[in-house]
Length: 293
Ligand code: PEP
Ligand code: MN
Image (tube, rainbow, N blue to C red; front, top):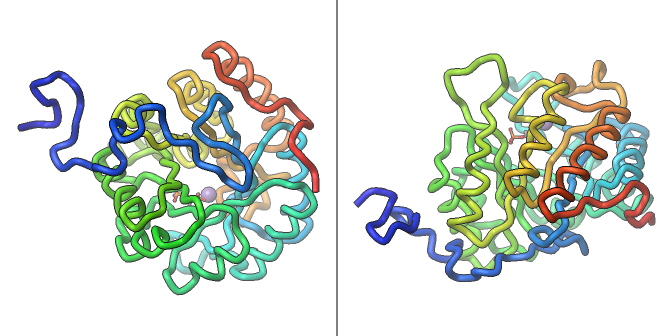
């Protein structure tokens, strides 16, 4: 039988039982350090691709907080295509994220790539990111499933929706029910964008699964100027959150500067996505409302 059953409802040839919508028809709300993802609010998670310096992360954290972002995201361990590229400040980066949380009150999400570092990352972060390249790293999924931290699981760049849900299943099966799915663009024949944002994944994932779905237009587009348009579209199709890369000086960023919004563009984008959210019965935090310290 193919992916469409004769009953007319969508189901998967290999079911993701624990991730299945039928298990929690109302939808799961994931709590990231006191911020609910999966409720009425569309949660904006923002920050630089990588933590670079104390000044950079503190400044960026304050910018995104003041514009209505509810969660700070920055990488301390960076998966890079070339081994010679900047690969993150590692533990020092985690400590700077903790400092940024204490100054802004924003919970933090950061990537973990290695089972040996899970405890260290858990000691600092409010949520763990599993990056696109590790969506198929089943040993890592098993281990983060044993933690009590929410997991932001990014879709593999060539992964189907079924594969994404089955990767979520690995985490859920271990007892960790706090999983947020992230659409971040997939590889297609198109080369003008870094990836192709699969917006159809949002309503499909929401139909198949009870887990919240966030969209990362930054890694999908690869161009900063496209990010606001894709962010608005993501909110319109039902995303529960957005993941946006922001840098105060993108030209000098150590990673992903081309797709990072400057503070003034982030501000404009936030006003735009807020009005789209309102038009679809959702809300996005107003500027300056997130708690500080
Ligand atoms: C990132 O989030 O900075 C990142 C490397 O993204 P992805 O895993 O989606 O490529
Ligand atoms: Mn990045």
